[in-house]
Image (cartoon, rainbow, N blue to C red; front, side):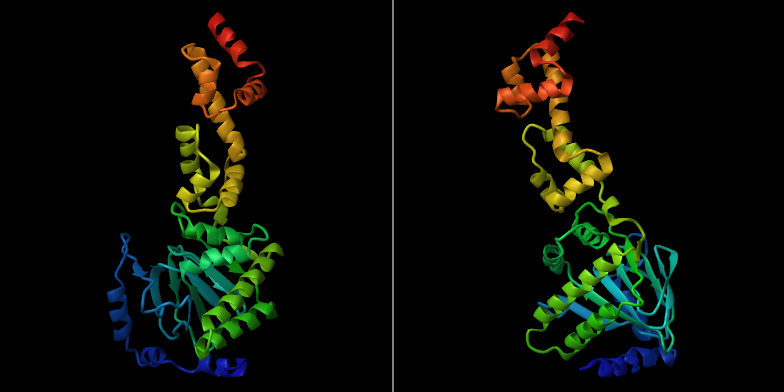
Length: 331
């Protein structure tokens, strides 16, 4: 299939579209009933065999025209591409115009409503399973961006996952060419199709990052601000003697480098600075009690090297542990 054949295929009426033109919504109503709802009463479309064949990492569909689609959420991350025309969608109840050539990255729990599309309004949905995201992040590890933060956010166990990014890509011939190539490949379903799709999808994401770097994107919420660092701060406070950045990151479902950036952004301090501050605060409290030796205090707050503990304490409080103890005793 080439781009011209793809264009003809996209403009052809599907069975669903023919039903909608005939004002037959019975099939859609049955689908929505099977999908069920979430705790807020919204239609929740699950990621399952209705979308993905066994073992496949990607799925592509054309959004059916000629009928309104009710507000819903879904269990996957979706990349939309406005192939032809434009439309005003509602995301988290906010109207958003998506113009021809623009792309929209939508997270799992984003409230999403698409209006009835007309003959020349063609919206493409490129859907990828969560198992593809780690490899995407490895390929996109050259630097931080809204896109990489978004993907990291969607893997996190504690993130809200209700954001979206609109890419102002209407004049990006690269993105249009890559989307066409992706669609042609997936429709042909030939040998090694998933490997080819993976490579093309990496290029699509790289183009989206380039658009972000040029200021040609807007996000509902900057993805990096959605993950709360509270679990990390609690872990530091409660497990300061031996906690590591890697352990906290693993528990939160993010990478150590990402968590490090997040802590710096939301608290103004690095992980190591937060950990040292907590250890020194507890050391000062223990020393004030005068029930343990300096060596015992050092070990209790996580320092096996007492000389290093002395140095860190001096840097923090401007005096040695012994001097601190004497000052507190004098009071």
